[in-house]
Length: 290
Image (cartoon, rainbow, N blue to C red; front, side, top):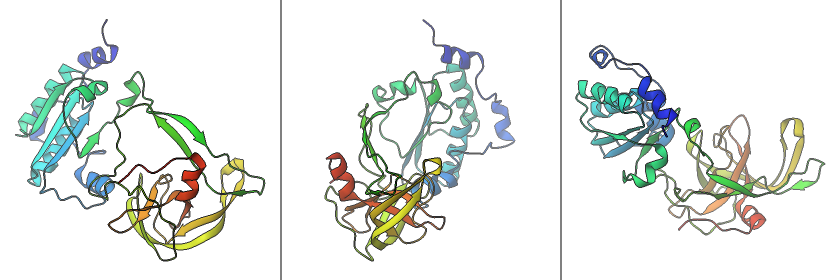
């Protein structure tokens, strides 16, 4: 049986590129522009004098691979990029483009993202996986296990949270080492003025302090209505952006003790945070950490 995805990109490697054009221009864009990677993934703190390993999964004819490799080469970074793709035809074009630029630290591997655990490629500092997941037979990573129903009738809520059971073991409890690594497994109660930090999807690493505890907050949920929360933690400004909900707030010290779970925020970045003790007791779970 043939693979229709592989067959498609063997017949029509994407995007169409000519390696001879590498002498004329570098195609740059998003994701994987090095400035963007450093800003969003490493909060601007990555030292590219250190070794850097990247995986471009489903790299096609090499736009992201060539751009990232050239940026790293320009910085003199001791890097390795692994370009993974199903299509031999696409890999040949990508390899020719990298070769035209003398980017010899790019390694080309023919294979599927779904085979990644068995390919022995090691760990990566950064992974680009753009335009790939919709091709996979099963992109599910977890099953919803439980959630706390919200009340919109004026009754009091304590947490807005859900929990899922992973269907794969290819995950870690840790943030990247450039942030704070593993959280502590021992939560602590928030106190006024406590320094805290979080790593979120949008604003990545932010720091702040606890501005209020035991706060009562009304949070709007669009057509569902307004839910009242009691006993909440409120942070200082510029701590949260849209998309950061679900981030774990920890103490901003060497211990990284969990303090709360971000779930809402204001336009100026104040975060509303469920106390972590209430979240854990809602599901009878503990923190995965040190």
